[in-house]
Image (cartoon, rainbow, N blue to C red; front, side, top):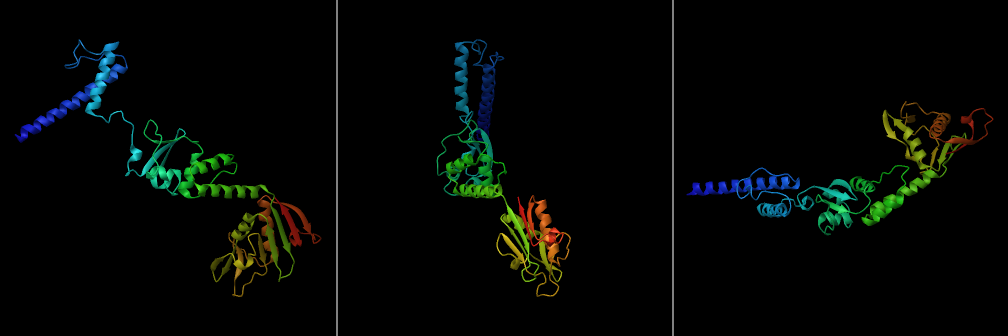
Length: 312
């Protein structure tokens, strides 16, 4: 009896699968307005699909039976609702973005975090079952990149600051708003003329002083120099840094025997102020600065001047 019951169940399952295949085939033919080949009863030549009301009635009947066999057919995907899914695809203004769930939920309290965590019900989905957000699609790439890296990296000629600020407010990302404000401040500094002054008192007690309104140039000078002692590199000496805008070299020889400042690339010993001053001037010219004035140039060399002023 157990064998017979198993055989009966298998036969019923096979008939159900065959029935589903026949209905799907008939539906596809009906939509293309072609006559199907003769099917097994009850689809005989007398009641097969045709034009007019008969075809519409049979089509509705087949679709109804198809849903009874498998009610999940032709239903939108609900993959974004699966808690086990680590990747989520969202549709922002017609642009599809894929990201890990933890990336979108990086900042608690944000709109995206509430959506993917289930705190806020999803209002709209697209035809593929993805979360749909009716906002600017192209600008969302900067929002998503910020969520991924925690940094706001924009091109220098970025022109949509106001739009990105509105999007940050909409997604309730205060961290992005602050990063955008910092970026604007940096851009404003770069747009202002940068002033560079190199002064040399020709006295060992005072040494060489380099001032620049652009702190990036000071960092470049610091990055070019390194202190070396006993065959090891110690980095840039902190005692030479007066502030983020000023470096003052009062001496080169440290109390430790054999300690010197050298250029990183060629390890040239900077034993004189003139060598260091020449390197600074060359870095300024390569960086786009132009010489405005030089004081006491009677010695016949720019390097021998007491003060050099550059602007960029």
